Length: 156
Ligand code: COA
Image 1 (cartoon, rainbow, N blue to C red):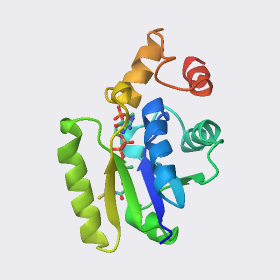
Image 2: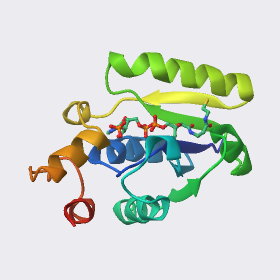
Image 3: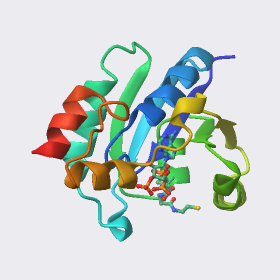
Image 4: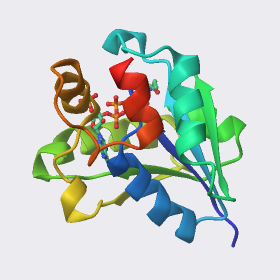
């Protein structure tokens, strides 16, 4: 059975932790659609277009991964793209409560779409986009957390 998966997030910006989850998902699914949420409530540092552009650049070597922006319900985006699975990353126990709620709500909205959780490699469990943005803004090193193209965008 060929299964398409959507990996949603704000990706403000995409980090090595996201990349690690996408690498794992690309091995499991026929196609992975990285869905960059507009998410105005989070007041992202980068515009939606820039976040999509950075993700496309970082993921250009994966044959079965595409990147799309979206500004609607995740469950609608997933259906419109003929995907059957939503992937979310679990970095620590603290992620669980929110993710459990999100998965439950999405299941209620469309019971045919399953949420599947993947865990990143240990060295990525403490990365988050906002911490990386803060370190970059204060002039700290971020080479271990993001790709060079994202580092340049963050330090500009
Ligand atoms: N590596 C590194 N960081 C990771 C990570 C990983 N593997 N997994 C999560 N994160 C970080 C992100 O960088 C982000 O960090 P930040 O908050 O410091 O910026 C944080 O974990 C969570 O962000 P993210 O995974 O992008 O999720 P989100 O909570 O910002 O967005 C959506 C969740 C986009 C899936 C959700 O808002 C959504 O579905 N929106 C569409 C509208 C909708 O359908 N709403 C109803 C939902 S029921």
